[in-house]
Structure formats: structure tokens, C-alpha cells
Image (cartoon, rainbow, N blue to C red):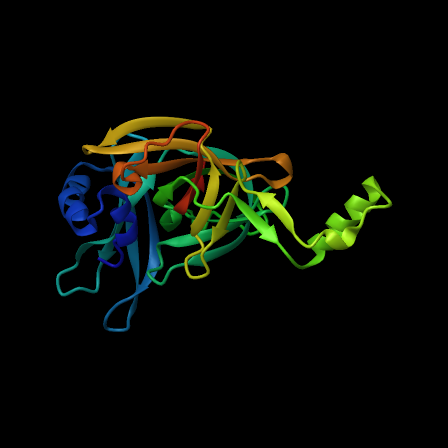
Length: 280
């Protein structure tokens, strides 16, 4: 198996090996085919062969299981192999995004998409259907993209404000003070405080830009069970460019949340794995 998304499976039950060992055989046996494609693959013998890939999706809940199966025609006994297996945020919120760049993974069938919102804000997401849609994406073209995310860590915020003591923001604040009162002693303005409550941002990781530090607010909260694991589905905005929020469904397991039960109106922070796919 080329990639099992261990950190992402940890976010379901806290034990990736146990979860995958339990779920993978059942998902392969009962999963429904979700697209097929072909790709060039270099075998262990150094020969490039044309292999086939197809996806299997198991489950009917908003969060499902996705197995990526690929042929291995160069093996001593040609067979199909499990290339990847990951939690799939099947239910998301659709946005019109413009494709900026594709970032294929080494295995040739998985990858991350870099896109921009209508206001120009950048966003990176892992596409579960990359194996079949990588040739559909055209840089510069816009698509309806269904966005969801899996929480790898999520809790109430520990920081509620930022204090800035240098830089151009100090001069901006001094200018504002003089506009309000021309006699104001702006030398006393040595810092500016910004509140963080109700703000929304998503800062991608340098190594894995589809994983990001997140802060936002729970607009709606739902709950369901997935293979006996309790899952919260949270509607939230990951950014608000020019008052046009990029909303998603964020899935957080009870294992990740520990003793915390999110409610509508709560401020949240954590680490998320962002997914997206073309919505027909």
C-alpha cells in the first residue's frame, strides 16, 4: 500500500492501524466504484507501464471511506493493489473556484489542487478523485468545488487577542487618532490590540498545504455515528475574503474533541485536512 494517510485515520478513532485493519477489508468488499482512469507507473524493474486505477467508496453517511485500487501488471503475478485508503468528506459546501496549479503526488494518482476564490484568496485541497479528474482540471478555468475538512485537532481557542507593537499598523492607528482629534498625543499609541473572537482564517502548512491551521466559528453543529464513532459535522467559514465567506463542513470525531462538545456560536481553533472535488 503506497499511502494510508495515518494521521488522517488517527483523527477518526485515535488508532490508525486498528481503524484501517478493521475497516479496509469491509470497504473493499462492499465499496461502490467511484470512477476509473489510467496512468503511467514506473515498476520496480524501471519499466513504465500503463496501469488502471479505480476508486471504491464505502458508506452512506456524510463522512465515508475511500479506497484507491490500482493494477500492477509488472508483478510476477499481475494483480490489483490498494494504493491508498482515507476518510472521505463526501458532504461539503460548493464554491466556484479557479484552478491555479496542480500538485501531483509521487504515486501519480493522488494530489493537491491549488485554487483561488472569486476575490483572489488562495486555497489548497486534497482531491479524493484526483486519480480521474487530474486531466479534467485546466489551470485558469473555474469549477464548482465541493469543500469539506477533517479535524485532526479541534478545541476552544486559547488566545483571544493579538497585541501589535511595531510596524505600519501603529502609524495607521496614530493617523486614525489624529483624524478623530487633531490635538491627540499620538506618541502614547505604542501598541494596537486586535480581538480574535469570531474571526476566520486557514493557514496552510508549508510541507502539506492541504493541511492547515484553522480558526473559525461554528455556525451549525450536527452529530452522527460512523462505525460506532461519534462524529460532529460543523458548518464553519475557513476565510472571509471581502465579506464572501468560504464555508465548509468540518468533521470532528469525539476522539479528537476528547471531552469537548462543540455548539453553534462557539469559537474554534485546530488543525484540519481540507478536501475538495468537482461537483457535477
